[in-house]
Length: 229
Length: 305
Ligand SMILES: Nc1ncnc2c1ncn2[C@@H]1O[C@H](COP(=O)(O)OP(=O)(O)O)[C@@H](O)[C@H]1O
Ligand SMILES: [Mg+2]
Image 1 (cartoon, each protein chain N blue to C red):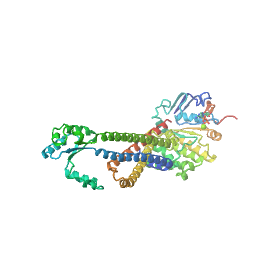
Image 2: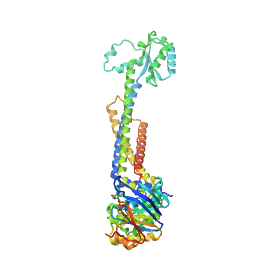
Image 3: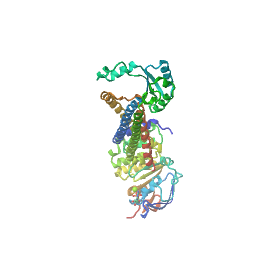
């Protein structure tokens, strides 16, 4: 599903790279945590897969597609196969929760009828049925995050990327979201979660890729958060 | 892929409403600049009718000597009628000439009282299609052999027997030519400035929404899917602005033109319906075009993500 070969990303020349010579393979249907301290390169990892960024060097394929040499016009088709929960939510400010989620379906040409049945269902799943008509600036951070999650998987993409999806949520809601991600994974979707939520990682016992200063320092299946502190 | 065209219409209208401050700014700028362009267009069109009316006054008069053979006069008239660029001719009898003179001098009747008999000659008045070609027409009349039989001084007819205000004509056309060139140049300049201004306003409105465009890209929207509502919105803003400008001009014209007609009785102040239709077309078309171009180029820049 995902393959990275010798991938490095340097944002600012003469500064240490955000990612350095990263190699990794993620198979279809896997559930993977990317863990590491703030600034270790987790978001960069995710943004490279979505082709939001280009690496400075190395090769990346996602869903059998060469992400680096892809034409601008092809990029939307790649992204329709990837649901992404952004660390900063990236909700459209002039759209309600409902419309933000619906947008991901409008983009792929789904009919109003399909949208009208799927969107409320997904919003219920993330516990936002009360906030359907609220605009992002009327929502708390946690609520915006759940809209972002709902949008990411409303079209059932084969790959789900989530950057700190529980970063703004209370423990109970976090647990709800994690079990939701787990359920999504059970339906065959590959799920990749960047997080520094130790309890979450330790309780789930999934594959863990640990980053430090842009390098992979550990990659274990059924792993824990680690970092002995 | 079955895209619902209704989607784009709903999207455009709701975006127009939700970004109403920016929309209002854009519409106002479009309205004001097109209003300026339109006002100047109409002013120069009125100016043009006035200038043309002066030019149309340029005509040729051939004075007929007393006692000329009527058959010769008629034959000469027939010849003149055939000269290219002659619009129409009219024969003014001695009596008609005297009547006109009396009418012109009715404030000082002693002038007429002093007249013995009727010293005024009859004349042939020639109106022209293009007054600028007056000299050519005069030359053709002079060449006509019949002229010698009809006028008082056949040796040198242009001295007193043919009158067309040579010097006045040259100066008049120089002046009207300059007025027209300046008006056209200023109109083009005004139009260009407005288009740049409108384009920039629309670009600014889209600049304010560049993050949105980036988000749309990241959730998989294709470029045309993102662009279409922006284009429609730009066109909608331009349409609203230009239609408001046209309505304002219509209303202003309905008040100002009759007032001018009352106060400048000697000048022909009118705006032809065709001129107004032309202006409306120009405003709507240039508005829509700049709406499309402005939003199209502006959105493009933020589609790189
Ligand atoms: N747009 C950017 N420009 C310059 N440096 C950046 C940018 N984004 C991230 N970085 C730097 O790259 C490193 C990795 O950042 P990031 O991937 O966001 O880490 P994480 O998500 O693990 O906190 C950090 O040192 C960060 O300061
Ligand atoms: Mg991050």
